[in-house]
Amino acid sequence: MKITLTKPFILKLFLISLFLSLPFLFLHLFSPQQRNHSQTITTTTTITTKDLKIRPGYTSYDTYIQRQLNKTLNPKLRKIWTTRDWNRKIPVFARFFEELQKKKLLEKTSKALCIGARVGQEVEALRRVGVIDSIGMDLVPYPPLVVKGDFHNQPFDNNTFDFEFSNVFDHALYPQRFVSEIERTLKVNGVCVLHVALSRRADKYSANDLYSVEPLVELFQNSDLVHVRGVDGFGLDTEVAFRKKQTHTPHRF
Ligand SMILES: *[C@@H]1O[C@H](CO)[C@@H](O)[C@H](O)[C@H]1NC(C)=O
Ligand SMILES: *[C@@H]1O[C@H](CO)[C@@H](O)[C@H](O)[C@H]1NC(C)=O
Image (spheres, protein in one colour):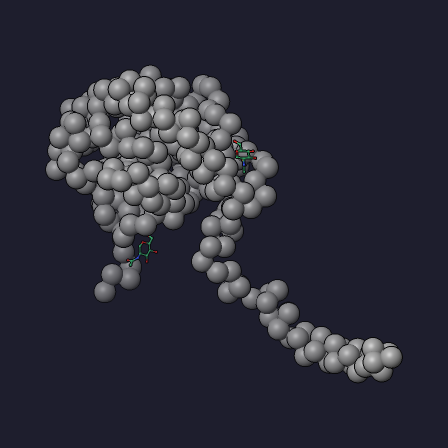
């Protein structure tokens, strides 16, 4: 009884509020300002070119992060990374870094970052070759070697590092963002070294597939290509090194 009495009134209220909210709805739909911070990442352009293909199937940035976390948090993998792999991989990483020191791309005084460092094997290797001021970054922290951070949105200021290393480029859902964050946080003349797989597909957690160095050269808009060489890096076959250029800074003053 009560319901039938109030029904027209509720309907009227509903129609009025719908009418009143229309301008806001339109404003929301067409405003370029509608995207908040976390969404800026989901709206980053995904470039798929002949030699760089983004894997389909990630419905949202959260799904992507959840999947990446699934690998990073896998207890069996973490156990292997900190035991068997620890002793097997660190000497190999240390040799890579020594070669980069010989080529003057890495100094003992360099402030260095390892991107996607998991449990910090690369950081430990850097420290063993004398690069003391080095840190790793991953979605899950592993103190004291690895701090928490998303490579699509690095938690560091502009012009922080002299050297950045990563062997997880294939995990980037937004390669352009991955690279621009490196270029942002590197100092001018800072060096970025990537180990990538060109001739074989990486793992099931990869978000992209890379078939040549070309897309990387295009992505590193503010850097010069220093070298490309073959390496034997645990399934990764190619080392690509870039050096950040001096860029004009129009809003400096
Ligand atoms: C995470 O891993 C578990 C089992 O290892 C699986 O059941 C689940 O579907 C995975 N989640 C994602 C988002 O991949
Ligand atoms: C940091 O660098 C980015 C991209 O190069 C630039 O857009 C931004 O304004 C810089 N931020 C500061 C605080 O200088």
